[in-house]
Image (cartoon, rainbow, N blue to C red; front, side, top):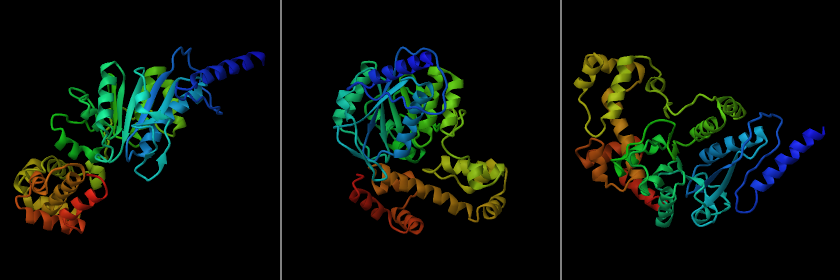
Length: 360
């Protein structure tokens, strides 16, 4: 009994030392489950930089595996701070405002900083924040992006030659803005000192991957079990559901045609070429689309292009004329009519609402 009490006192003292002012939070909460890890001489430090309209789901998913790792091991394996650009509370994409521990400027180089944002435009950081991230990288500090946090890293010039990702919804706008920086479609990427994820549950996948690297697969698997997750969602897993699953079909020809449509939005492929790629006649393609999707292939193709246009209106500063051209429309009037038919309002109104809501 005395030995157990001594061990608990040692762990409590370590946790208290890790939680001294300015050191961040190394919470070591008590729980029923326990998993021992070897001696740990250092605590890894993380700071979560909340930018405007950050997503609560991704932010929480990134932190919780580290908290669970501390709880399971009863050791301060990980310490974290929550900061904002100016130390003031930040409003999330769901309207919830979070208090923070302080401003970004107080973070030292021994801390990995995760930029957390949501809407591609809403989290646009200040020039001083971009400069701070650039200096942090130059002095050897680790950096990461959660959801669309990679945008801040791109603005700081830190993604050239790196593998990185961000939420799939924002890929079109990001690629238009940074054509030389193609993101991957994976759930998360860890490339040296740069870690990025697509947000949502992928933030937990990335954190569990870090824990696996630090303390082994067995421990990481228990952490994943505590999260009611599987420890097999590695970086090679894609962000989106497969085309076949979305379409609810196993028809390989139909899947191939939709893939080609998705990859050729700016210069739409003629139906004869799409049919030939799948080994079908045009008439057979039309029958398969009606049978499986209840829509003509030309109309389906146009819907993909219009969805792409809506994304570009939301996430870029391109003019409507440029967006129409980028989505395969030769006529602005045809584009506007088609857009209004699909979304119930003309593209000019969507553009106006984006500016009105402060997303410009």
